[in-house]
Image 1 (spheres, rainbow, N blue to C red):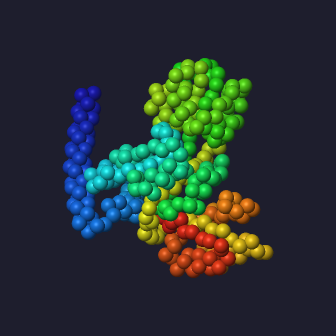
Image 2: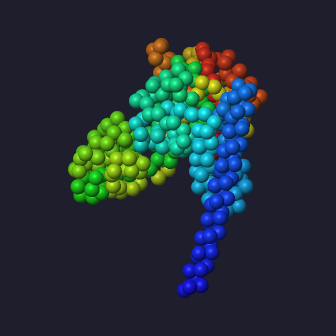
Image 3: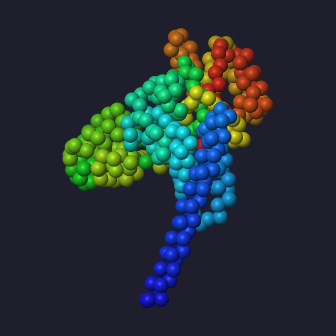
Length: 359
């Protein structure tokens, strides 16, 4: 037994030495980042280059021999990069609030804890914060894999001059939260309309007859429940920790593969990464065969379209705006040529941005 204790202590001493070495390397890395920041400032260069972050992630994930898992490695380096960016320059990011919503989680997943994350009351206010330069980036939801598109976000791009610089795919898990943690105490359930819809089968089976109440967000639901011992909220695990709630049941969503896609918006686009997506909005002339003709430039060049969505054009009755996502960067010769051909049958066309595809 004594020999076993000594072996454990030996391993712990080695772990301590490794931790000390990591600490030293982290500070050495931080010094290098500060030097890079000074060079950028002296040459009037952007301090944040999203493509550089992606290169770091890809190189490390490809070179990782294990057993440390890649998901954890990316999370660790997300925080390292976030902290180092904060040393260079404060980075303010606006998101659709309040805190503890899935938009908040997506923002943390993209920018880490060291960025200044600012909750906004509406999608238009996120756009405005970035347009006026009060935030470097904005984070807005654009579609859910089970509930479809977020129309407010698509509508904002019609008038806005902002560019999409990244996308975040967030796997959405819904927890049932309450003060007591006991399902028998639940007499009412609060949440946003989408999570309620995404958990309808579970609610009907486990809480039959219990009314569901729509509120502005999952965070608002958690806040309400924090003062009511007879109700529960459908919200995130983060909401439980922020509002001192207990998990009644975890992962109550009806569909296992439930993802929400978020877009990162900024005043300036980003360079080609080699694994990009381009988003476009356009309006076509009302002519026979126009839908076939607008897709032909992409089909003939073998360009994959990952999404096409139509929305009513609010300025003209019975006319529609199309939103298109395609694989490739606007600077790619085939993509550039296809978009030039598309312009021939458009009343107007707008490139919303080319950006790295979600990893």
